[in-house]
Length: 427
Image (spheres, rainbow, N blue to C red):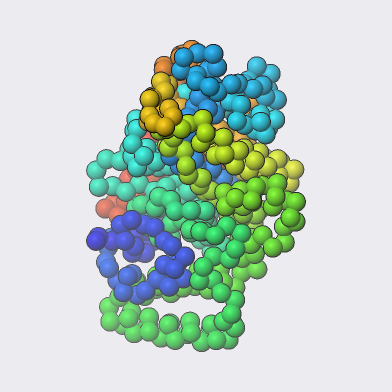
């Protein structure tokens, strides 16, 4: 397997880093070889104003008819009814009563136009802004945010994902997601059981071994090995490590987010953003509802409705929503026509038009972008390309979307390829 690098750091092509890899990455793994890529000068100049992003990823692709663009009373609308929201004239599906009250802080995109209706390819498109073509591995948007807005010397990771996600691609391990599998608990392999003197002795021994490695002709790799272990040591010793835990949260607060792993993950996301992490992803699967749609949508929607509405209210109450962008979407939408699957109908894959939510970081609450036809099969007004969405995310986060990043082969690539900002979302 080939290796690729950023800032002389060599990583495997998938670019991912688990907690174990982060804390126990080996010199042998780093010695796999690879090329060096150049970091954007813009990254070092970007003003650190505390902006952050929380991505709420609905893996499996939720139906637009059962979320933000219901079509009650029509053949394609199915059983789903619409309910009013806090925004005059805006209705959403009946399964989201708590979000209905929060919509004055939320913008709805009803006409996102995708190009991929397969899960892997759609996920790649909606998380990187690029289609899955060729050998180039583009980074997850969280890695872009970590690169542009993160602090290289931070004792906390700059990109945290509650659940497995895409990799940092050609940006390499320094900007890879730090995976949390048990929201509310300390990450695995992070232990306070080793006293500082013993830890320092172990690190000193490792430094001696790396020095021998460097003398054997691998100085760059040895230096990066030391940097990576240094990051791990800072994390283990950090007083901000408690942001991963929920012990100091009241039981009413934990209950308000919902007691599921997803709900607790959103609470952890709020804590991490509060602690200075610029990008957190929280995933909630179970949205691939090819059958039994109307039985399966209710518990799935209730879980997200509870957690997401509480997150938005909590961020607002704490004065964090103005600088925190919250994004909620999946990899595509679902077919306007219900299928005839057993034991009950559902909806299949559909990328022509689907929905997303944006809130915070200057996004105009209550805005509704785009309109679909009465049967939901066509975009009637204001299509939003995926590149437009990514241009908009960059604007909200103060990132220059035209900034060039360099692959290990020296190829310059802009953060976003084409598209334009959805100006109606900003006052």
